[in-house]
Image (tube, rainbow, N blue to C red):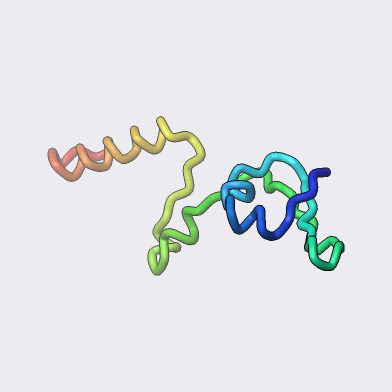
Length: 83
């Protein structure tokens, strides 16, 4: 487990975004552990970005499949095709 000070996190916030291992956040003035941070397996920002359209969002893990679905939808709208 790595130890990182609060100041280091303030200087370089990418430590949290690129997290791969467990690390402890230490307050150097008081010499005590403030928190232990664990990486998450998978983070989806779709729900937070969708806003009021959350109930209309279709979740898709495969990017190529999502592109194909969007292309077929656009072609259907443009040329009147149905899937």
